[in-house]
Amino acid sequence: MKVHPRTRLPLKQSTGAWVEPATAIGTGMLFQPPLPPRYAALSDTEMAAAIRERKRALGSRLVILGHHYQQHDVIEFADFTGDSLKLAQIGARQQNAEFIVFCGVHFMAESADILTDERVAVILPDLSAGCSMADMAGIDELEDAWDFLSDECGESVIPITYVNSAASIKAFCGVNDGACCTSSNARQILEWAFQRGDKVIFLPDQHLGRNTAYALGVPLEAMAVYDPKLPAGGLTPAKVRAARVLLWQGHCSVHGLFTTAQCDEIRRLDPDIKILVHPECSWEVVQKADLAGSTEFIIQTVRQAPAGSKWAVGTEIHLVDRLIRAHPDKSIRSLAGIQCLCTTMYRIDRKHLLWALDELVAGRLVNRITVDAQTRRSALVALERMLANVSAQPVAVK
Image 1 (cartoon, rainbow, N blue to C red):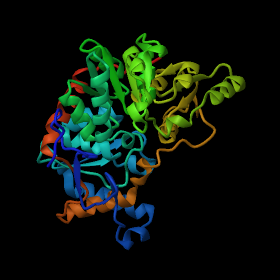
Image 2 (image 1 turned 90 degrees about the vertical axis):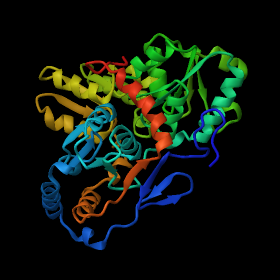
Image 3 (image 1 turned 120 degrees about the vertical axis):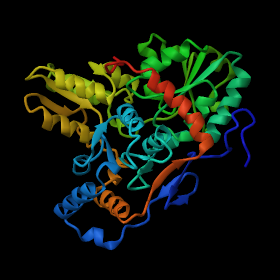
Image 4 (image 1 turned 60 degrees about the vertical axis):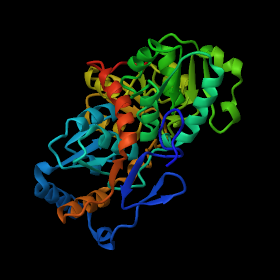
């Protein structure tokens, strides 16, 4: 197997993980085979009862993790819920379970496999539940970028990857003295990086990187966007040398739907409403907002707000809906007038969850996400640095 001469990671390795059963389509894209027809014939009530029965049968051998963006009729079966950081912390503690069924997306299941003992099997109910942002940064593209930056910078560069990335990207950061971060601790990780190097390359979400760096006092003029689809990332050597933060050309398809025009319209309709957004939104939207922070920050802010307060929330619609249900004493709405849905997360449904549990009860392990040993070791370094730099409370970006 060919390896990169500097990182020693496998070349052209798109995710660093293997799964079973799965069909690869192109590079790194996974296909979920159709379920047996009998699942389509089950009613919601029948599926819910069957899922509860399978959970009882598996007992303490099973832990179900559910991301906040998961649809309502799946999240109700989760033993633990959280954002990416919280679920990574919870997953790392699951040393007694035999199976972790992750109701999230592929990169989250990879991280859970890396952080748990090798005897713990991590299962993704639908293999097509990926992340478009994570797919925007491939290991071969990052290696090309690193070669270019190493030749042109003349200064030390620290690679920082958002947790929304493939295991191979995390491993690259671990090998090259970098780290992983989530939106909850991006500020702490950037501070950590600046203590160790002259520049940072932040991937794959340019918006989280820009918003966090700006909050730390880095001016926009000291940031440059690296586009992996363009020669030399679309940058001249002079631009690279002038930049303190190099931002990967990537974004979240959900948070990209929030606009400054929506902020202006909300202000026009109700000047008393507070706008609260996720830092995956654009810099322009974050500047229009009253507050910006991670999913856990959003949840905590709304929970602690006084009765009668008004909020327009810029994040995934399932979380917004749950905030509305949990806080009837407050006026809460989505910032957008359109449905901002994480469509890949939505692929995890009751049918696929029940199917995965049926197979476990029958003694068959399906859709196991396993990161190879070499990638696992290096990615674990980046993830452990992430987990070592966490504040007691979620930190606002604005």
